[in-house]
Length: 83
Figure 1 (cartoon, rainbow, N blue to C red):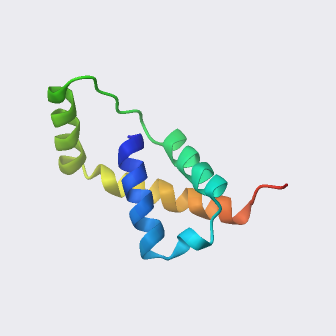
Figure 2: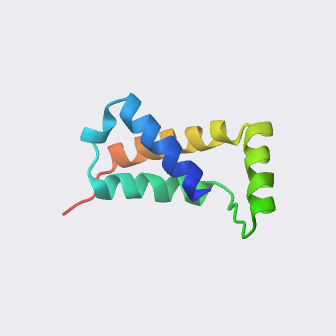
């Protein structure tokens, strides 16, 4: 799930040119918030990886990841870290 979230987040930030608006710590906070709201998906074998990739496509998991990342971006934008 972390690899999927990384890819979707990088795409989302570059599309919206939001990468300049978020510090590296804020990007990590966004990822952590989203991953905490998504289910874990771990595998140790190639067949397990293939199964998860099929599940991502069939179940449209990327939509869930995108939804959680956008929600996390909103939270981080509204509540920046205090120095």
